[in-house]
Image (cartoon, rainbow, N blue to C red; front, side):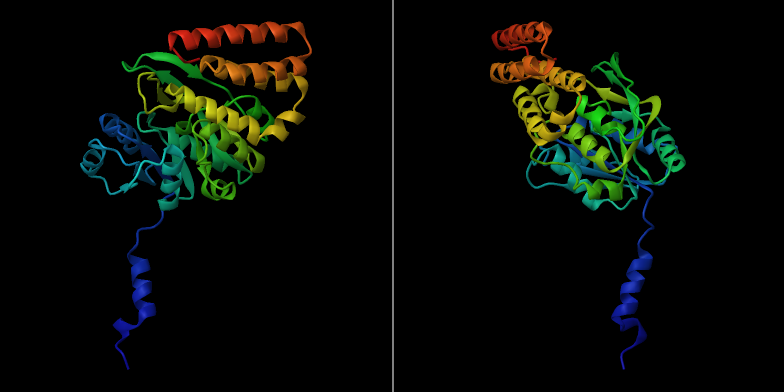
Length: 320
């Protein structure tokens, strides 16, 4: 008869007992060549008043010193995962969730940062609201490379908000949301085929299956940098592809929106296509807006968008 210590079931049980308990929150930070920013980003997580978390950094095949900078952080809650090849932010976030162990998932972009009570207040709000609420987000402030405020996002949604989110991405950046892990897995995670609008797409799909609430405070600093070629918002081709896919993916939902809400949503898409200099998309969407609004103002709106698209193409200065 074998010794007790050799029993495979006991050995397996001992391995389980050695594992640390699962954290309440898993923070997922995808990063690609942002070694210069990753330290401050991680520091804002380690400064959280809610300390029951793990932090999973997913290095999307960076060629800079990201790995070394993460390795230099002496905190056992920080974990490092690396892709062998660059796969994009959506894939990196999905990888992070697969590696995560927490009941809640919080995303943070590698050049953004949080206020110290961000996680504490979101988890508290979700606890107050109960299991019907699967997502909590916060307001955020956009800052430039010198830390100066350049924008604010303070949209407040509460409850079943699927139609509102079809009109515009009122939740905003990934860096503001906390989502129950089971809800995230239920919707199938992030759509890796999208080159932009990944956060908006996720918010819409989450809103179909759960209620959403907002911590009405500016708890995220969002970094605006048009010169950063790794930012999707700086890439016209990615903006065009993502917004085209959103129109296709949610075509049925847009078709059933009330006329005024549909017109408002389509105008948002028109602004993006004009800012990206896409004549074809402006023309196609312009005809749709005229048919939807059935007002002379729709024609004027489309003419302005065409002029703006032409200017973007001539100057090469793309953007909103």
